[in-house]
Length: 82
Length: 152
View: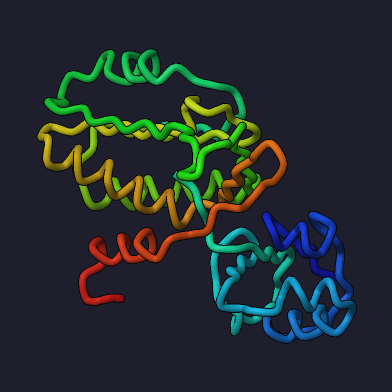
């Protein structure tokens, strides 16, 4: 079970800020494929991965990263702080 | 070294005075305050900033730690707000103190460059009828390159 978090327009497209996902995905990309296959709103949110960033347990990583031991995976657009 | 993530408004002048008080070995204090501005087309009524509680504090702390390894800083301060902000209100500030001004200026710029692209905040411009997420700019990402020679 992994906590998936969504921020900014990813949250808006999917329609919720977080959810628990039952998955055996090995990598972030595998998890994305599972989510995409669920419903059109997920497919819309994950349409262009170059427009997205991902963090595992609050550390930025990339879509090829392993989910071994991961508790929390967050998806969001490039950050606009400052 | 102080990091604060908050929704409340802050007084940048008062923060800077408090930061500067009691610094004995710092010959230079540099500060930057970011303020909500109207969008180019005008007609914005407010800005909303979303963030990732937990990661935000960790990411900023890591950025400040990195600055401390690169420059000899007597003190550093980062304040960043989230939630709904009115036009003209302060969004964030950084302050750095060092023995010499070059270190204080460079560290402040480093903190700003990284806060913009590596701290999990997302800005949304709220208009009277519409709202739009602010898009990250290529220049902001490119600005990180100058701090890591040899990397893209």
